[in-house]
Image (cartoon, rainbow, N blue to C red; front, side, top):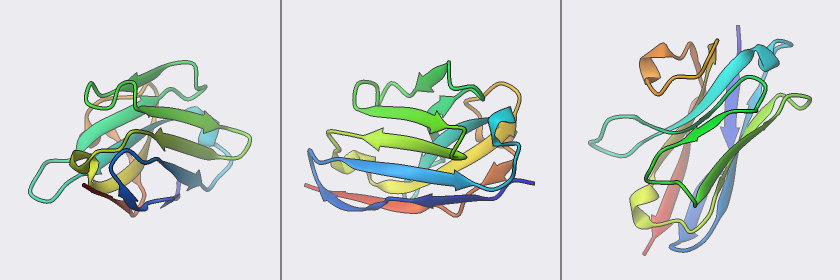
Length: 123
């Protein structure tokens, strides 16, 4: 069982930055691949970025490449999402998720989810 708690969301002006954190419980965090997803009102949940269990492999959605960076610290049981050059279209609830094995772009393959943190970007 893994419990995930996100933090770091908030209101920011376009062009600004935020750093999201996702703290995981349990001693097996390093065996899970992690993903950040987001869901805007009226839209489907979409993958923002994912990272392998050891942190050596990452994937970022085309819409955030060059602006967002996923990373993890297995000693601290935490995964991060650094978000730079934020735009109004990045406004959404951001969720972190965990799955055993290799990461996936499909939200349906993730086993554990956090409660989400709101990110609002004003123009």
